[in-house]
Length: 394
Image (cartoon, rainbow, N blue to C red; front, side, top):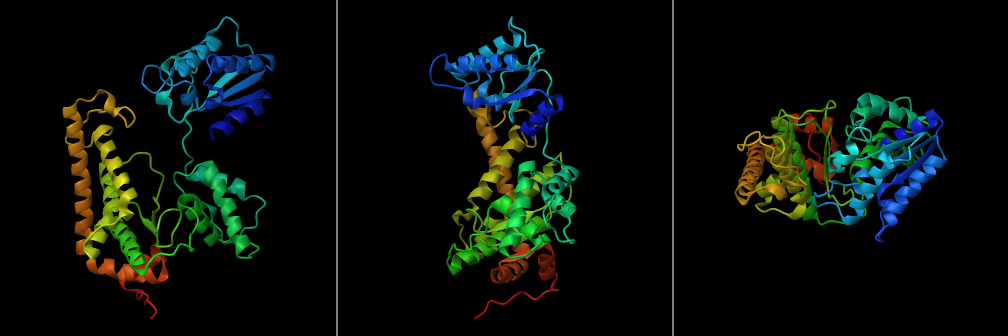
């Protein structure tokens, strides 16, 4: 939304608009990058009133002396400062910058008189997502049963581009099915496509692998459903999407801006549920849990280093990109020990839950192997005994 906001600002002010991505100005040749910066500002002065939009500002002007910059970017920062503060006044020229990593931008650019006014653009909330979906839905044939509000609730964290993609994918799904109108299941499939990629039904896996994937995904789902602080499970599938052989989808009941320690622990335990199920049922583990382990380890490390949620206390021990620069070997070892402890506890929680719910694990997994995809209602019905598990054809 940052680029769109800059364009809207230029349109509303009836000003000319020059958009430049930071890396486009960088050159390996000495002096070329600085010359490119001067040219941009020269064109803007000639085209005044004009707005200069510098996208990916962190790549163009990274923090100097932090190990991430280079001689080229240091000279670019100096040239930018010269253009912003120089003798030649920027009359009729407004300079906007955009970045997803403000902490990486050189502080000198953020001082008064430069990029001193900062506007935070979060991902759209549920009302914003519904409005964006409505904009992209204009002119498309939707069935009267389609509920864009429900789709908005299913898509927390989606950007405007993601939501536009959802509508387009839904239209494609309807066309493939030779339907004149887009129905709700088209939108559900479109959301999954944006989240995890298209179905890959052509991928052939062995019956044993299908068995492992089913128990793995149901392991995730049962652990998540057993923890009060976990987000609700909305779908479990063993149909391959992208690189994943299966997927378990959670949908938060509301937009969330603060996450408690209990919620983070629930996420970790849920992520480890697949590996725990493999060990309980097959007495071994597979490479299928690789991404789950990465997610769990990352959450644990952030809890220790950034959120103060470990025995080391409320101490800032560095963000992911710079934690290794200033820590002693002793502190680093303590961090690793706390991270391992949190991961081990998450795995133990998952294994305990699945051991206690062994019969549910088997019942739902065997059902999933037959139907391949189950939603929240079907999962609840199988667990409650209201729906008999499907039987594998002979």
